[in-house]
Amino acid sequence: MAIHKSQRAAAQQYQNAVNNAQGHSFEDYIKRACVLYSQQGRAEIEKTPEPFRVTAKHRNDGTFSGRFTARAQPDFQGTLDGGRSIVFEAKYTTTDRMKQGVVTDEQAKCLQHHHERGALSAVCVGIQNSFFFVPWPIWDDMKNLYGRKYVTADDLKTFRVKFNGSVLFLDYVAQIGGRWIKGADCSPDRWRNGHV
Image 1 (cartoon, one colour):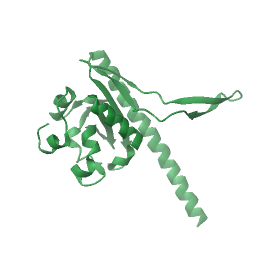
Image 2 (tube, one colour):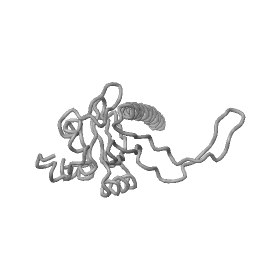
Image 3 (cartoon, helix red, strand yellow):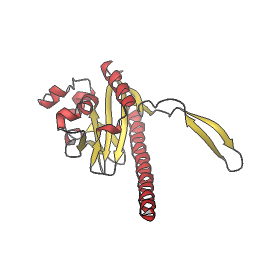
Image 4 (tube, one colour):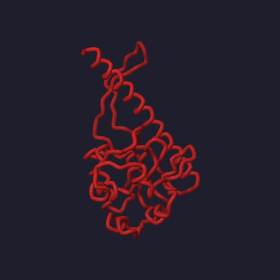
């Protein structure tokens, strides 16, 4: 039995390492889009640094110890051409569904506050090889809109964005994106009724 538990633990550790690496790749794809949007004059968006402090340096091998000093801010923040701010989380999964709970309570509160003040708040989602930019009001109302607290790639097809080696989060495949990004109301009721 102990062998079974250690094998499961090793398999879980491996899967966590794979997920972490793919999550970093996903963020790199988003960073590339940020550079592209900056070059095009469409937006200035940057990855938010993690609030981290070095607590000890290990001179022998060049490593260090550290700790997070505060709760993390949203993953990306910036300004769109025209002055509207943009704030979003980046979440990736290798599975076929994204759980609403991957956005922590603290992250949700922050995204909601920015949304209430007029920012473009969203969750940039990667589900396997498909990418989406989901407006915060839609993500926040997931249970009412989809009947459950997770979404699949099929659920999010309206919010699918282009990918060319970069996750082009401002470039939707469908029509919804341009109107929402330019400031159209994106309330769950309007979306549910097909008005966004």
